[in-house]
Amino acid sequence: MRVLIRYFFRGVRILLAPVMLISEKLSTPSAVERSSEEQARVDAECQKLALYQFRTCPFCIKVRKEMARLGLNIELRDAQLDPDHKQALLEGGGKVKVPCLKIDHDDGQATWLYESDEINRWLHQRFASH
Image (cartoon, rainbow, N blue to C red; front, side, top):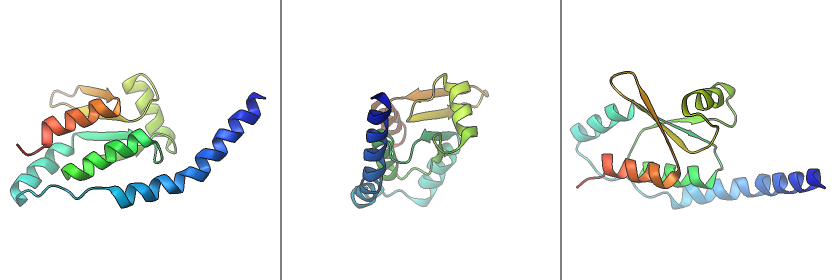
């Protein structure tokens, strides 16, 4: 019985994946406008960030939409399809849970921020125009 339930939900995910991705493309907001100097500064700061995610995870889509709205060029690392990224997420963050934003600090330390609302709040505080 468990196997049937597992396959049922797996099938539902397969059927909904294209719908979710198309919906993301159609509803992604335009990026904020910055001067070229300010955008260069933001891009440099984004080099220290990486988002571990699954392509069709609704919470990951939520974070990617916020990244698009804020005009952030953050590296996306697929922890579902890439075993190296999955292992890095497990070793660094302590669990394979997405979305997870890895924040590298100048001292070589890293912070692993989980939960889409927390990630979006951090991105907004760090990069939103005031």
